[in-house]
Amino acid sequence: MENRTILAIVLSLILLIGYQYFFLKKQPQQPGEPEQQIEQTVAETTANDENSAAVQEDETTFRTPLAVTQDDRNEGEQIVVKSPLYTATFSTRGASLASFTLNNYRQAINDNAMPIELVSIGNNMEYPLSVTFPGSSIAVPVDVIYTADEDSLDLTDTVNTKQLIFSWTYPGEITIEKVYTFFPEKYTFDLDVRVRNLSDNTLKQNALLSWNHYFDPEVKTDRYSHQGPVAFVKDKFVSEKIKKLDEKKFLGPDVSWGGYENKYFIASMIAEQPSLTSLIMAKNANNIVSTSLEGPRNIIPPGQLGSFKYSLYLGPKDYDLLKAEDVGLENSINFGSWIKWLALPLLKGLKFIYNYVHNYGVAIIILTILVKILTWPLGNMSYKSMKEMQKLQPKIKDLQEKFKDDKAKIQQATMELYKKHKVNPMGGCFPIVIQIPIFFALYRALLYSIELRHSPFLFWIQDLSAKDPYYVTPIIMGATMFLQQKMSPAPGGNEMQAKMMMWMPVIFTFLFLNFPSGLVIYWLFNNILSIGQQYYINKQKT
Image 1 (cartoon, one colour):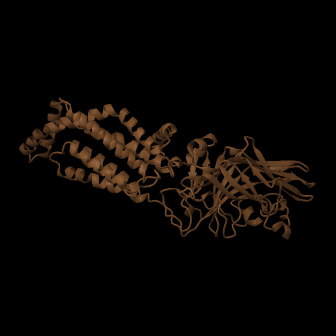
Image 2 (image 1 turned 120 degrees about the vertical axis):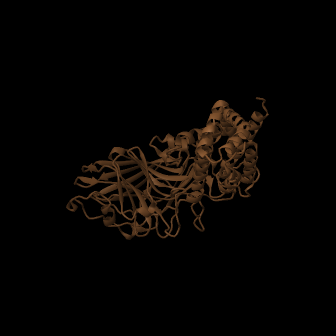
Image 3 (image 1 turned 180 degrees about the vertical axis):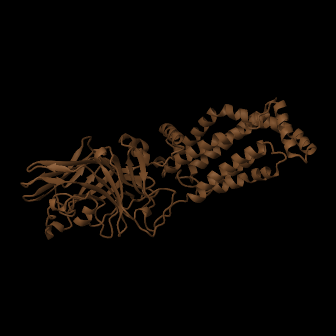
């Protein structure tokens, strides 16, 4: 019975690791583009297209969209906003975002690599971030030219917030102001869309804030890391596969935020009034994927002002930074629902250790030692049990020879032998049982945490989130598994289990070849510590 139990645990571990390797393959890199770059574009939309996304009302209550002259459709000017964390470029055409680069994150490891760009404009798609007014009394065109109150903003040498105000007026009808507020040490900035009624009629204005992404259908996607629209609705994280967006998806109300993510970065729009905010996910014929927040409609009397307020977080999926927004943005990090309870403390432990050693590889080794110390008593019990079982192997073989034609009798006699000598046949399973949840929790923490991206260890290992480029650590890890196996008692009488255990180092080495090098370092040093502990127990006199 004990042999079957141990074999089942071993096979379960191999099955789980094999699933991660064979079925959750890495997403292919798009030719000519950096792996972590988020392409952001938006299609030109007409008033009718926008109205179809809004709540349907009596069209007779809406006025004809405002006429736009050719002068209103020129290219516009660019306004650059420099922050310690990012550099943003806005265009006066639509008061839209034209570029958003992250100063502290590069597309590749080398120092000369370009910074990560969260906006990519191409194919005449010029509005990754847009504000439209579907289903409103006046549908303001998205591409009018606004007037900016600043030529540029620089937040690099200040602790104060700064504003950039875009304004556009249709005489006698409406004035639109888009007020961006920037904070020197935050990836978050605020957007206040102010609508002033210049007419003699009451206006019903409804703003739709959209983040748009061009999706190339030629690039295959898989489940390794989600890329696509995401949201936090009714305190639950929602992600949608792009291929399922052939029809618009409506969510809400009670939408805290919505946006677009990839493995390490996110562009998110945060609602001021979640309980009154809905969300629309859509993909059009030009493969533009849109995530849009639709808030409450403003009733604006003549001469009065209506306001639509949002916050936007454009940056890395750093747990502490996302958590600080207090809207559930941290749920966009894929720690895994069943293992998050352990993955998060391990990540926090790594970051705490890193603050002192300034090397995540060293931090992983120290964390491995701390975990081994915590599990040391159970490990001792396990290895002592294995040692006692090894002593009983000759007697077990005698029983197998004596009752070779009666398997039930062999099992019964073996259990009586264990009971007589006070040996727990399950004791040897503890190391594997303990390591399984720790292994997968650390796997999640290392695979999806921005802290490990491009983080070096020593020598040839310059990215702990990527595989060992020369496969040195996986091979050494396999060797330690082989040594550990040689130190363990042979599973007497069970040929199948013996063969399985013999192949385990080979199987694990093969599986670990493409795992994050940080995870391999953990498993390698855990094996080394386990070998030391087992050697210590084996040398003790009983």
